[in-house]
Amino acid sequence: MNKKKTAADKEIDISSLSIVNTNAFSPASSSGSGPVVSDSELRMFGVTDDLRDFVKGLTSITFQNFPIQDEGEPSDVETTESNVRKDLSEWQERHATLVLTTVKQISKLRYELCPRVMKERRFWRIYFTLVSTHVATYEKQYMEEVKRKAEEQIKDEKEKESSVVGENSSQSESTEKNLKSKTSSDEQELDSFLLGDLEDSDGGPDDGDASFDDDFDRIGNSDIEDEKHSKKDTGTTV
Image (cartoon, rainbow, N blue to C red; front, side, top):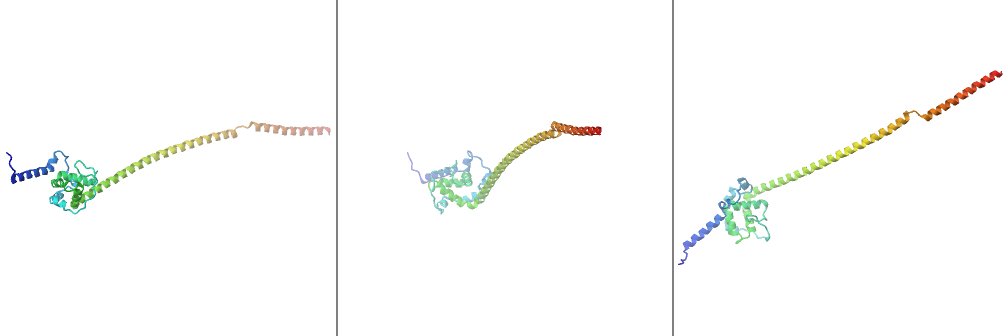
């Protein structure tokens, strides 16, 4: 025999359903299967006690009545494992993931509102506008750190390139010096060879010149002898 549910029974059913939905998004239910998040990472992405205290005062009405215009939403936007939209910034994406897994109030609001009341994009735009004064400092610090690391990486790459160029330049200079040294050595050897031939030519006896001198001496001596004989003949005649 089926009995009609009383108002009390209906109230119990609704209460039970509410408890199930709330627990489904609580940190306790997700901590068993999800990775353990360190306190330092939570702080880096702005999930602080101050933020938790602030979001306790947020309700679905807060989101529904928030004065923000809807924008055209691309249909092909990817989502993360936690169903967080990929069109958020890197910091916002990680913050949203951590908030959904560690702050029960936000995970519950998102479940109630998306996508039945508002789109995912609108929900996160409203959320980050509401909590901006509580998380802006952490986002700024994170972005500055990312920028600093990027600049250091670029600097390291330039130093490596300069080092490689310097090594190549040193090798080229060494090769050029070796070539110059070899060329200079070859020139010295050629000069020594040529100078050696000239010294041999100038320092040695010249057979042609000696023969010419001998002939000249003979002619001179012959003239003297003829003159002596001529004088003798003249004296005899007298």
